[in-house]
Length: 251
Ligand code: PGA
Image: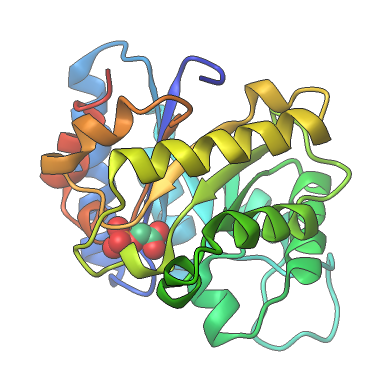
């Protein structure tokens, strides 16, 4: 276990227009306010256009806001991209980098992801670096080697336990309703922990999230697995009650 406080992060992906996004963020913030002190950090990562209205809507509530991607550079001729400094200025404290949908749909490599994470660190953001094997890689017995290779390539030298979170998201479990078993999760999280301890002075304290079809009905057993320090939640983060059900499943 890392820092003691779990992190439950909602990845809204390309979902939501302004009204519903603000309503959703406010609904999560209200549940947080009425819960009183809880040993869980809460984060939502809306699409880029909603970052300003969402950060304004939840300012001062303790609900953190993050981006879903950033460019490695601070500024320049990069049409359509957004820099880590822009996210920070808009009120973000976190950014997801290397999500499997970006690795697949945008051809992102480990080396690129490392530069994005370093840019996030330079802007004062916590980088949530995603790793995870595909179905075919798991079937070939390569889950561990793939995750180790991704970690080796996508964690920059600037990483510490305070500016970096690792999210293990098996690609076959994302949005499919198939979840890794607690034993599978335990095995890969232990491997990630070993790698982090070897690689970083503060590796024992880096938070490692599990992601892939996390929902209230499976969160309790997943969040109890050793070295699972929280969850990265896609589909279930789009409904305040479901997202909150995952938060309250944390031991
Ligand atoms: P899911 O997505 O919870 O919908 O499976 C998780 C993610 O992609 O971060």
